[in-house]
Length: 252
Image (cartoon, rainbow, N blue to C red):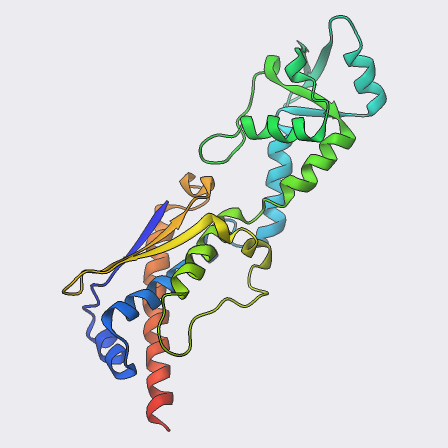
C-alpha cells in the first residue's frame, strides 16, 4: 500500500515558517512525509496494547485450522492404517475428518508453513473446511508459535521503515529520528517499508510511503480514512515544528 504526500504547500502559514526556517519546498515536503510515516504507524490497528493484541490474534489464527495434540495422542492417531481426527466445532460439537499425509504435520517447520499457506492476501488466516484441517504435536506447535509471535508489529513496522528511509533525505539540522523505545517491537520489521521522493518543478513534487506488509490491504487494520488522518495530523505537527524552530532561531 502507498500513502502519498504532495508538495502543494499552498497554506500560507506553512510557506511562511518553512521559508523563515530556511527549508526549500521539497525539504518541507520530506519533513511532512517523514511525520506521516510515524502517524501511519500510530493509526494502524490495534492502536492500544498493540503487541499483545497482535500476538493474541496470531495465536487465534494459527488455531483456526490446526489441532495441537500431546505427543502420545498424536502418535496414536497417526499410526492407524486410516488416520482420522475429531475436530471440535467453534459453537459446540465435533466433526470427524480423514487425514491425508499433508494434514499430519511432523515438525514445527511444517506447522509454520501450513499456517502461511492458509493466509489470505490481506494477511489473515482463512478458515479451512474440516476435511482440510491438520494435526500436530503440541511441542511443534509451540515452537512454530515462538517464531510467529515475532511477526507482531509487521504492519506498523513497515510505516516506520518508510519514516526511516525518508528521514535520510532530510537536509540540514535537527533530522527527525525515532527513539529506540518507540514501538521497539515494530522497529524490527522496518525492512517491510520504503519511502521515495519524486522531485518535480513548480511545487509538484510527491513523496510516497510504501508498505509491503500484506495487512495494509485489510481495511480493519489500516482503513483508508486512517491514511488521510495521518497526512492531516502530520500537517499540523510539521507546522507546529516549524513555528517552534523559528521561535528558537530568532530568539538567539
